Length: 294
Image 1 (cartoon, helix red, strand yellow):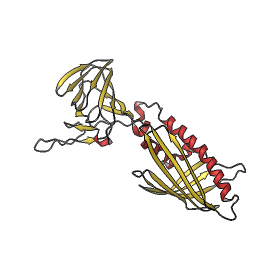
Image 2 (cartoon, helix red, strand yellow):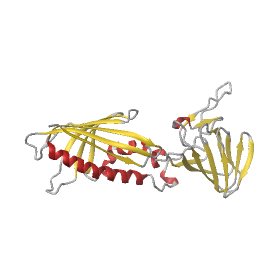
Image 3 (tube, helix red, strand yellow):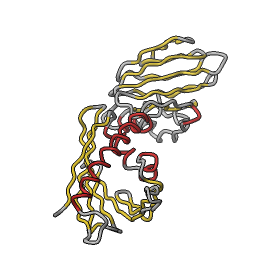
Image 4 (cartoon, helix red, strand yellow):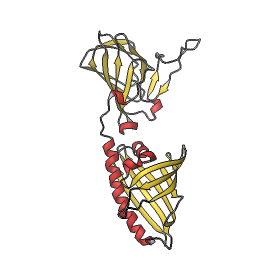
């Protein structure tokens, strides 16, 4: 008899966020309740060999084994097997992910295995045990992944991007908060400091000046935005920001919807302070970058 289990759960989060969270092996002790530690033994961009150690069981026994995983994000599939099989003759696991919607992902675990003749439980009993435990762990993972989307992020919690000018921080985005409709952040600008001109082919932008005063050049036409005022910037409108007040400006921005790929989200139309000088003929090649500028 070959043991076979098939369990799934629907998680209210985008596929990319679910994939990254559930395949971050180093964080498995925070995701699963049964694992005490994960030690990475070998690692490549698409595979890992690692040791899993469980919390002590009711008899204070500590179980540990080596497994390996191979993943293909494009195919949304992970294949794993136990290298140190312990009581199993073999244990193979396939994880698959199905995108049900922009905020919903189905995660499925299919396990095929067989117990050794001298194992403490037979294959039928292990099948029942795996089905029972999978339901518990999947529900826990669902709760923890969904909770990770509702997070408070401060300016000092994320890196600064100064390439286009100012001190710009992307606060909430797909990688750290599982956003599916856009991202938001803030930029600090000293008096006279600005953000170089660019536009967003796929997204609208919403600016709110929390402090200071801003001049925004929209396709070359200046607009003044004062403290506690907001501005909408449509798709494909070139915009440049300049702080015109006597104090440091704090500008909050939100951009959405997301571009098809992060690197398509911004097109630069002039160099920023962190860019190399234009070429000799004066031409500027538009730079395409991911989230990180207004």
